[in-house]
Length: 366
Ligand code: PMP
Image 1 (tube, helix red, strand yellow):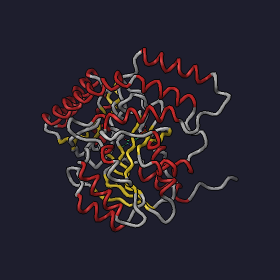
Image 2 (cartoon, protein in one colour):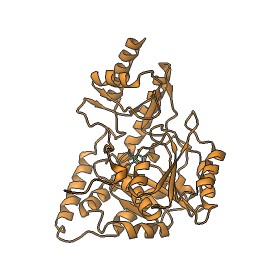
Image 3 (cartoon, helix red, strand yellow):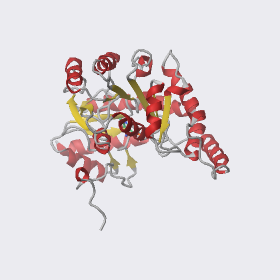
Image 4 (cartoon, helix red, strand yellow):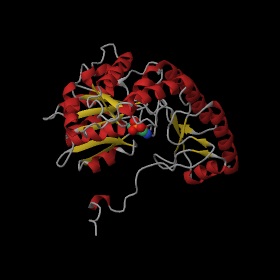
């Protein structure tokens, strides 16, 4: 007989939203727009070229890709980003797991503020890192003094700070990053602050990226992904920008050749189409703002959103609302604090279907 699964994993279900075949899928914060034919052709040609060299292992350091990612990130900071500051892996989930593999572990802790992305405690569990959970205020903002005090009390090795946050959609002001970087730096050894900007490209005008603060805080890490703004969730490509010493530490724990030649080629090709792919981001931001306004007009509460989704509620029986929407062909996510539901922003037609379905459900509920 094989050994039983590790004690702390017993009885646990794997993470993941239901993958249901429904006409309007607004549950996993994907980008509803697929790549253009020109982008598809470029990816296919690049992958064909990579295929000719598949008998060899890929570039372990993925230098060409890191260079292209550094160039891309430089749009969001006046200070520029060097290739040595960038590291990529199979989704930002893997990037953050690698961070905890390198900097977490037994006797160390990781901290975040709930409600937040439900994978964070799983990275901690899987790396035997103690999980510490602070909390957000009623409007999902952070009480900075209390948050900094919690960091000073627990001295976590890693603070995970999504901005915009999932599932609430709320972004953090730059002071929050500064206050928490300083609190984490006040212990010896210093803690890292990971600002998870998976939805960074969707932020509203005037909301800066934490990338701007990298020269000020050596313990700051900013993670990004191609899954959302780049409409490439299927590609599995996430990355970070940080002090080069942090990338060097990750190099020790990463599996050899963790990024396949096919992934590297496809990601490079997609990055060449950044202007086209990001054009759709502007459309989605508009649709997001219209969706938030419409939900508020229905008398619902909606968290301010800088992401490609909105958290709305509250419902006495959110599961019933989720189910009623599903019966009308619209799949949203039952996630976050009790009573709230999260809807990803789709195409105008998908959002019209969502509004119609929710209107029907709300009338029925009255
Ligand atoms: N961070 C946040 C806040 C997310 O919501 C997600 C995906 N839902 C991720 C990270 C991970 O994304 P990926 O692994 O696709 O890059």
